[in-house]
Every structure is written in C-alpha cells, then in structure tokens.
Length: 113
Length: 113
Image (cartoon, rainbow over all chains, first blue to last red; front, side, top):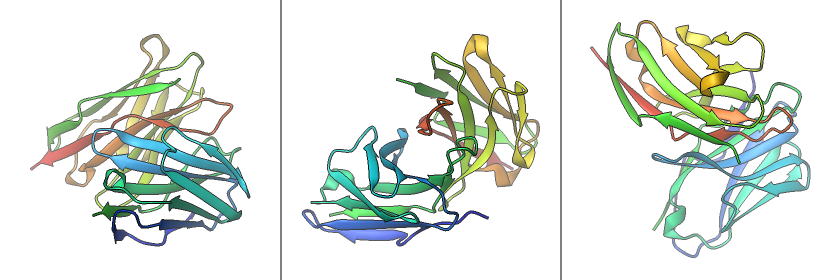
C-alpha cells in the first residue's frame, strides 16, 4: 500500500513564526501536492511538484513556499505564519501514468495564534 | 478553469436508505472524475474514478457513480446507507493530460439509526 506520512497531526504556532510541514511518501511517486482544507471550500491546491527541485504554484500559493530536495519528501513552508493560515493541510502524491489517482496523508491541523 | 459543484454541504440519511450525493463539473473536454471519502481524523481515500470507459463506475463499499456528459454530472449513490458511511465526500475533476485535481466543496453525510 502507498503510504504518505505527514510529520505532525497537530501544530500550534504563533503569528510571525516560520513553520515547516513535512511530507514523505514511500512509493517513489514523481508528483507531490500540498492542499489546504477549509469547511465549505473543499481542498485548494497550494503548490505541487512533478520532480525533484521542480515546483509549480497552485491556486492559493500566497504566503507559502515549498521545497523538494529528495523525491520522497515535499515540505511546505509558511515564512511568517498568520492567523488566516489556520487550517488543515493535506499532502498527496501520485504517479502521472496511473490515472491521476492521488494518495493522501492524514493531514496536519495547524493553529496559528 | 475547471470547477466542481457539490450540491448540499450536509446530507442526512436514515440507515438503510438511499445515499445520493450530487456533483456537477465544468470542463471543455471529457475529464477524469473522482469521488474521495474522508473519515473523521483521516486523509482522503479514493472511492472510485471515471476515465472514459463505462459510464457507470463501481467503487468500494457499495458506492457507484454515473457519468452523464449531457448533464456534466457525476453523482454518487449507494442503495442502502450504513452507519459506517458517515464521512465527508469530495468530488474532483482533472484534465486527462495533467495531474492537478480540482475539488468540490465537500458533502458531509450523517447516517441516522
């Protein structure tokens, strides 16, 4: 089974802090994604990566950056956390030739105080 | 840009009753269509997907969905609800050539005994 692991289930940070959310997948997938999930809005794509050191902006990249130094790891960075970034963050991975199926981690619930 | 609309953010059904979750999409080309389910405190997992084969798609846990091009719809059904079906359900669409998913806002299903 594909496993996508997010390093923290819950995080509490202060406004202005730099926050790192880590995601690791064990299936050698080329594509990795970061979403945020908010009630009524579904999942919105923040950034995605289709190869090591490659990244593309999603629909809501403002206030975020990403890093992919190794194929299995995709990090989401909040340079200066703000209260409006309080949300559930979900990481996913996929293989391009496998019908667009994405596999998700359990999520990180981030609270910014 | 693609969009996905799920009618009804909350649906309440009695155990044993039909579950019907509605999804409409906008796409200029025949898309890849998906239904994902999210159980409490978990990530999303794939229920089923449509990839231009049969228009009626069967998924896990007794769910199925029908692709209707003329109505740009991909509604999800289950003939008889079970308590374990209580979860949030997301419809998503992707272009065949790309790998980004656009999600609907989600429908939370409550199953009453």
